[in-house]
Length: 225
Image (tube, rainbow, N blue to C red):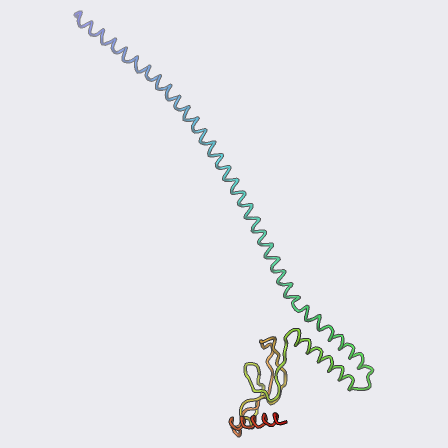
């Protein structure tokens, strides 16, 4: 083998050694860099986890506060609803207290009349006592509670306020009340009980014009008197 060939082989071996040596150093540096990057990454991850945990804790606390407020609101609403129902029931139960207190005087007078009737010898005195109680009671209901009775014989029949329980054909020009079995009552302008009446129906013998003339003559007679 010549000197030149040996020299080339020698150069090739040296080159191989140098080439192998460089990657090892490079690998060690890369590994060190990777470890550093990994450590930095882990540190960053730990920091993000802490922030997330704090955020979660804040949200959980906020949710707990909102839940507490909601439950308190529901409880307050339920209590208010119960009080409202109770107040309405009490208003309904005791709505007639004022009226009943006013009726007590009439009841007391009736008790006195009953006691007096046990030893009374004059029936008229008992009747007068009852009449007095009736007038007092009617006056109180009319003046204080706006309760008014209606329904008199001769009034024009009105199906809106009268309940006809019978009728007869009579010499009248229009339906009128022939008899009143039960008076009707109005509370202010509202009918609370219809009057039960007997109605006289026109039998055709009296014309409306004739009735008007009769009414005019009666009116003129009253003015003359």
